[in-house]
Length: 579
Image 1 (spheres, helix red, strand yellow):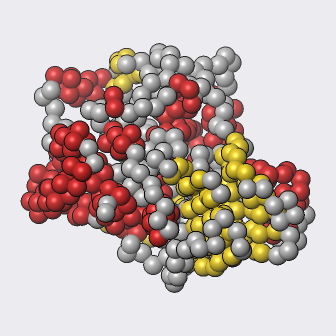
Image 2: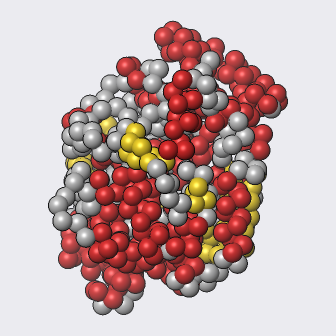
Image 3: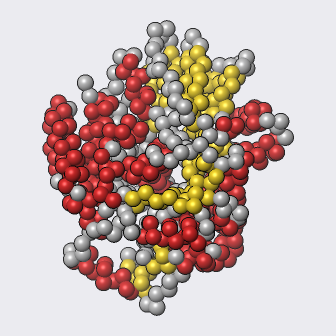
């Protein structure tokens, strides 16, 4: 993915991977006897991005800083470069903590011989690193890093623990990659190199959430929530206007993208192109089409019928570096690869809104401080993963937010970032922190979310919500308690069928955005392609581990989603760890 590469070394014979020279990238290189910096960033929002080298500093900044205008006004800086220098002089090494948006970068203070390498609070632009005595390299792209190590004959090994994370969660936990020697810079952390010594520092952590709180005025909460959300919308959509871009906004049958699209429109950002991708005739298409038409937005729909995008195994793995199951990001790639982004904005999404305004915790009776494995797609090999859940997190919601949300869902951003920048107003740290200051009992099961919509955006609540198959404004006359939450009594029949094993899994029908099992069973060509890929690449596993070979064969007998977990492992091993 676009970004940068940095290497600090003692070896004069080090070979750099060739710099990416593509028409949609701003490229450049700075070399010194002891280090080299390569830049290959998207050419959008170019005034937000810096690549400066003078006698005192080297500054590389990639991304979109949604509050740049606010910071320049606050520090009375004549331009963006001087604003950053003012921030550094005032705030020190973690000056970027005041940034809002999506970013990563490098800052070299030549007078102090100090490198600071950082990314944003939620690591939406990930950085990966490899270090050994007298040597460290850092890259925005895993494949680029692996290529560099191969070119320089620096060995790195497959981490079987990481393989089982991919086979269970579909993504990597904590700082793990598929290589035992390559790690990921954690969210809210920065890496400091001073006089050749490397250290890691935390500059931001999400606040600890809690289950309940006395004396909550719900109307005041909704007003504050709405003010902060509208401020986040303004920050992000005003950036488009500065660059004269048409707003590009994803839209589905869910609430999160709907709120981004709807609130932005109400605030005057109606010049939108909405994009949708799903199985034809499913709610993600039909609801999005209706909303876009009613708001008089332009709209593009890409059908995912027959699961054709599941052919793109190696192409997606090259982008993700094998850190994520390929089938997830492949579906967004299937539409993005056809779009001309020349005059379009970054992709505005509703990423993670339902677990920020609501919560990953649905059963409010559970002990929040009891941290356990959760958020996985397959439980068959969980017992083979070595990971200390308790040591790293203060409660279960933060574990799920950092691992399933930030490490898992965020990993899919790498596909979008091949083409354009991307932001979600729910990711605005000032908005996010406020949500986490509210008790889970108020947020859980979309209680606050629905009340916010119905109180502030009633018309948006009249459309069907894909999750419940009912409008947000729908009120059941009778509710029952089920696993600590109220559910409409009309859902009881479906739950009983599911519990008794009489219900057909939704992924085996057409009634889903990505009906994997339906596609696999109905599209003989797709089934043949996936099965052939599996059989052609399995022999290589025998040279790695007999147990892994058996486990991959076992998991491939499972659901189609589990099959794609296996294929993701096979692809990554072939691309990055093969002979």
